[in-house]
Structure formats: C-alpha cells, structure tokens
Length: 436
Image: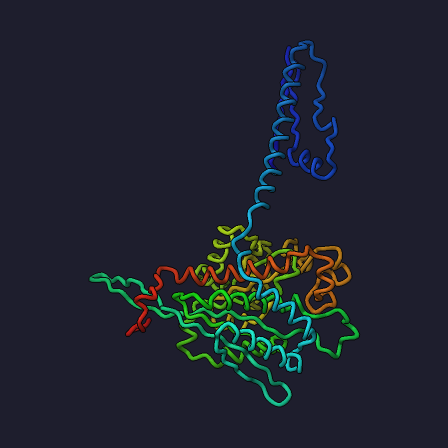
C-alpha cells in the first residue's frame, strides 16, 4: 500500500516515536464522505519542553494537507481531462446501432432454426446488399434444423516480406485472411414469450451483429492487405452449428492462410469490455504467437482512448480440460463461435462484455450492478436481455459506445496488417505469381 510517512523525533533523550498516516485512508475518506477526521492528522507524543517542536510538526502536517489536496486535485483534473477526450471510434457511423435496434424490435425471439431466425437472415442480407456487397448464402442443416450463414468476402492486396538466408535475401508475396464472425440467433424462442415477456436479445447478440454491420460499412471503401471474411453465423445456440458449417467449407489452404479469427458477442450490457485469446494459446511455447492479435488490439485501444480490458484474475483454472491448471489470464472459459476455430489452432480473439474481477470464477459475472441481483449478475438468456429494460438500468450512450468502439478496433487491427510484412499498395497489387 502506498503511504505517506510522518516521522516525529523527540528531544532531550526522550524515546523516538513514529506514526504512519496512510494516504489511501485519507483519500478514500474524502471521496466517500467528503470529511476528514481530525484524529487522522493528530500525532500524540510525550510532553516536550521545546515549544518550537510543535511549530515544526504543525508545519509538516500543513504541508501534508497541501500535498494531499494537490493529489486529489490532480486526480480530479485528470479525470475531467480524460472524459473530455473522445475516442476516434465514436466517428464510426450509426448504421450498426440502428440495425441492432431494428433487429430486436422486429424479431426478438430468433432462436436457432425458427421462422424469426430465417427472417433475420433475410434482413441481414438486404442490409449488406445496400452497401454494395454480394453476399454468399451458405445453407446448412437438414429437415427442420436448417439455418444460414451470410458471408461477405473482401479481397485484399496481399503482403510482401523479405526472406533472408545465409547467402541471399528475396522478397516474397504473402496472402493472408482475417475472419470476423457473430451469431445472429438468440437463446430464447417465442415459445417462452410468457416467461420472458421483455426479452429481445439486444445483449446476445444483436449488439455483436450491429458491430459487424458497422465493420462492413467501414471496410466497403477501403483496400487492405488482408483478405477479409465477415460471417453472420446462424444457429450459434446449437453448439455453434453455423461456425462449424463454415469451418467445414474452408479448404486446407484457406485454413492455413487464416491469420486470426475475431468473434464478437454480447458487448453491450456487461460492466466492462473485454478481449480474450483462444484456449489454444495456453499450449506450451506458443503463447505470444497465439496472442499476438490480442496484444495488437490492446495497443490500438490504448492509443485511441478505448477502455478494453483483459481478464487479469490470475487464478489457477483448468481451461482446456487436460486436468492441469492454467493461469486464468487473457483467456476465458466462456465459449462462443470462435471455439470451433480455436479447436483447430487458429489464433482467436473473443470480444465480449463482462466483469472478471473476483477471487474465484464463481463470483465473476456479466455485471455486478445490483439491478441484476435476481439473476446473480447474469444478463444473457434472461429477461434482462431486453432493450427496454437495459435502457432503464444502464447509461443511455453505452450501446452506441460499445458498438462503435468495437467496430473501430476491428477495422484498425485489419489496417495494421501482418507482423513483419508490408501491405502491397493498390497501385502495385496485381495478383502475385507466387504466394506463401
């Protein structure tokens, strides 16, 4: 604990005495009660004949008070200055927010394989066609369990890098892709409308869909080194069936060329915005390689005043089922559409909202807001997952902030490109004759 020490030395052979006043105690009392007890500053000592000592001690206490006030003033001033700064992410258009709101209004119970889920698929297809894309519709399933993935592909320019050997160096051309995915179905179906009268799935996962709509809008007029694949997955609630169907359709070359998979889910209502790497990053000797994209995302967030957190609980948890505890840091046990890509060793980044502060996993939850006490902090899959209810509980700008900032981060990490490679400019982006 950070402390301020006041040392009082007695004279004429009297015993030495020290008293430590804790700065945190003072600051906390000021912030919590706006009062300071006189006893916090009192120094009780034996009788001292030298009256000048009290003058010196008094001056020291006065200096302490001034320092404390300056610390508080600086903190307040810093907070005000930070709040005045707006993330560039807020310059992202409002298309994603508008689409998310429209989605939950029209189709609140879009459970996997339902009629409402089919209607949402058509709604997404129409929206992205307005942007000038020609989406690919991938139908999967059989009989009464049929759903669709809506896929957008943007061809990039590729990258160039220098490969050096003992005798020479040569420029090589590299083709890599990024996959960004969200599921658009909900956990609750219309058959449970009476039990969940306010439910509409704005948290899971209209907020994620809105973010990907914003990414699609932003990338429409840009050319990047990466090939970009955006997938709106159907039937995420059925063990990530849409993500599995898309993965099965990928060629071995496409899998090898995938630099990372980004998954966005439930970014609205949790206390804080988090990003995690995949579980495959816990393998020995590959941590940095598998978490590189996570760290890049964090760097972009810091540079652009976006509050993006890592899970830093540092608990001992067996996250991969091998009966050996892993360090529960920068990863999560929460599964989503990324999990099927994670399982085949593709580097993954999972973005969600949650609260990972807690001494055990049991006390970590989506939100510690007392308003969610009846569900023990859970929002997804509950009647609290409702635009109407959440807009009453949360600050009004949160949905906009989370969708815009998340989409901004994704766009910027795509622009950043590959590590140790340079994107080929559009002026020289003819198809490479040899691709690594």
